[in-house]
Amino acid sequence: MSAGTIAKYAAFSRISATQAGRERNELYGRMAFFAVILGVFSSLWRAVAEAGMPVAADPKSLVWYLAATEWILLSAPPIHLEIQEAIRRGDVVYRLGHPASYVLAEFATGFGLLAVRAPFLGLTAFLCAFAFTGWTPPLSALLIVVPFGFVASTVITALYLGIGLLAFWLQDVAPVYWVWQKLMFVLGGLMLPLELYPAFIQRAAAFTPFPSLLAAPASVVLGTNAVTPGALARNLVIWSGVTAIAVSWMFRRAVSTVTINGG
Amino acid sequence: MPRAAAVELDQLSKSFRVRRARSTGVAARLRDLFSGETQTVCAVDKLSFSIAPGERVAFIGPNGAGKSTTLKMLAGILQPDAGDVRVLGLVPSRQRRQLAFQIGTVFGQRSQLWYQLPPRDTFELLGRVYEVDAPEHRRRIDALSSVFDLGTLVNTPVRHLSLGERMRCEIVASLLHSPRMLFLDEPTIGLDVSAKATIRELLWTQSEQERVTLLLTSHDTGDMERVCTRAIVINHGRLLWDGPIAALRRSYLKAKRVTLWSEAEHLELTLPGVRVLSSGAYRTELEIALEITPLGQVVDAALRQTAIRDMAIEDAPLDEVIRALYATAATGSVPS
Image 1 (cartoon, rainbow over the protein chains, first blue to last red):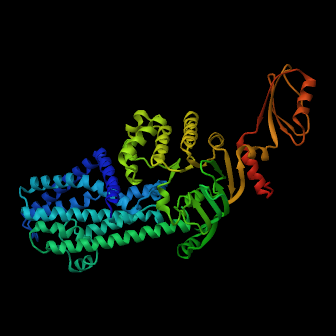
Image 2: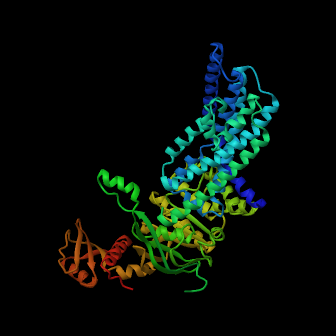
Image 3: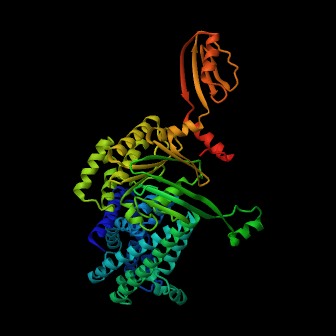
């Protein structure tokens, strides 16, 4: 990829980051929601531990685990909504006519939003988790979670792009997103580490991208050493490749659908 | 066809496969879910025309005539089923990217401006997208902002702009990379009279100054008359008429509108081919079918009744000319 091409897509990221900076209320809303979620769950884990009920992991670690998974998920911008609206309104015709790849332009746009949200939400996660637990995981764990979590958010953004492309066929992608979100919650181990799930769910989850995107990077804060950085990197590279191929294929199909069926 | 044409279409055709209309009843609906029966709809049917560089052409047709499909094929967004198309010497479906650098598009009901940001941010993004040298691009933004009288609008968030202001910015956005050809799809839709006049004037001026070829679709005949010199009329994807707008009027203008201001309060004109549109207060408005009764005969008849203080003779509005053209096409008797 030439410097000019990189500059072209970087411009999409820059303008969407600028727009994200102007839409601060949405970000503040996410930060507040994040703080509430962490507050509720830290109280819950504390209550469970105080009641003498068996908890498979240290309650403080579980709060940090949740902070990591929520940070990864909330940082990924829901670009499928923008794509869906552009397809419905017909504004997509402008992007299709530009001398730029539609898929890369949309992805770069999402990445710009992610680049603004991730630091703010990451800071919220750190401050809230520390405030609610009075403890932080080792710096070495955080240095693994942050970069891998950011890459996982980037892959989730690409998956949202794929969901958005479905609007070329479905017009309304909300049902698909809803199913995807629930799968992410369950198979990704959003609230609890997958190790606490029944074995059959763990086995099913292993065939999906969800554990690699949420549970695996977040579980580093548990200090169980269940996932090595090498395995994390390998899985993220594999799922990034699969996502890129799937999204490119979907876009080609979408364009041919428009050509065949009009729109 | 001239070799140096900006646009050349030769027997261009495009069909779409669409789902058949849904059946009624639960069982039929369930069957529809699985059968997915489709039918083929011909959107563009062996369409041929060419446009010379610098021409300003109105592309006219009723809803569903195939105008937007043709524009999308010209921009390389849709691939034709048959026939040849060249825009600025390039084949749009195969050389879309190269062509994109040389054409601009304006879709009246769509937007390419970032809604929360000032237009300048979109303009700067487009500079990168079209790979324009940065200092040159800044000069171009300033020059077009001046021509389109954007002033402080370039730094005002798009959400605060009126529709007319936004459309001026949309047109500037489409001209920033100095395209040789501009496709406009209803650029004045929804604008007030004053904003429409401004947009038309600016389009005309810009095309004159930079020799930009314009292909404009609109249902507003004012756009066609004030911006374009030639009209291409299509219906059901087929060419109905192609020629100067003045000739379109002459070919289809079977009637003139005449307003007479007379000494007498009312005029009684019962001549064949003469229809009184309004009468009273010393003013009579007539529509005269010239093939049946010549204008002079009508004026003579009026003068026999009273003195005529003033008279205005107008062509029928272009709207009516086009309606007549569609009606004639429906009966299959369009003159060549």
